[in-house]
Length: 194
Ligand SMILES: CC(C)(COP(=O)(O)OP(=O)(O)OC[C@H]1O[C@@H](n2cnc3c(N)ncnc32)[C@H](O)[C@@H]1OP(=O)(O)O)[C@@H](O)C(=O)NCCC(=O)NCCS
Image (cartoon, rainbow, N blue to C red; front, side, top):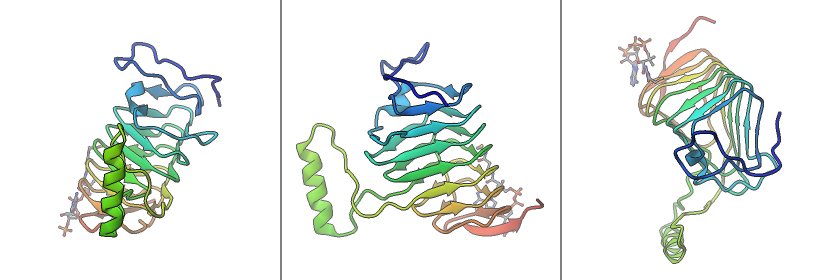
């Protein structure tokens, strides 16, 4: 695992940014663009870990100060959005389809007065961002999982090994290994052979 001493630039990057120094990778990995880090604020010792052969492209990492994201070996994430204030773990050989949202926190307070205050605070800052409100719960995507396009994985969910999530599903509960879960709310529609 390479641990860089300073932020680094990607070759041929269209975005004029850098990859933060707490991003640790096991070469070879594919990182499409440093634009993935424009909302990344992790100050954890390792904020993003990428296993050997992992690929992250056109994906926004909206990671709060204590957030930690990990991609296993040959995990493939394309055009997704990962919102992480605590921990999002994506297992080996997991395939995350385009426009998938994986979140370990809602960021937005349920209480109306707190929501108003959060919006007022955001209005006073140049970044116009809502920092974490309330509890974050880790999300774990198991090995060999396939998540179809535009699916949403909500805080606290564990998706078991080898499961498949249908396109545009909303997953609020744990998914048993080797099942297909689809719909909103996501339900088991079939059990897969192992
Ligand atoms: C989940 C998926 C792989 C299942 O495919 P399948 O095995 O051929 O499943 P079936 O078409 O036999 O569907 C089984 C049941 O689940 C339902 N279902 C399947 N996908 C669904 C979805 N995305 N949302 C809601 N229901 C769904 C079907 O209506 C069917 O219900 P029924 O038994 O009541 O008739 C597929 O539907 C899917 O969503 N693929 C995503 C592909 C994708 O995102 N590719 C690009 C990104 S990598």
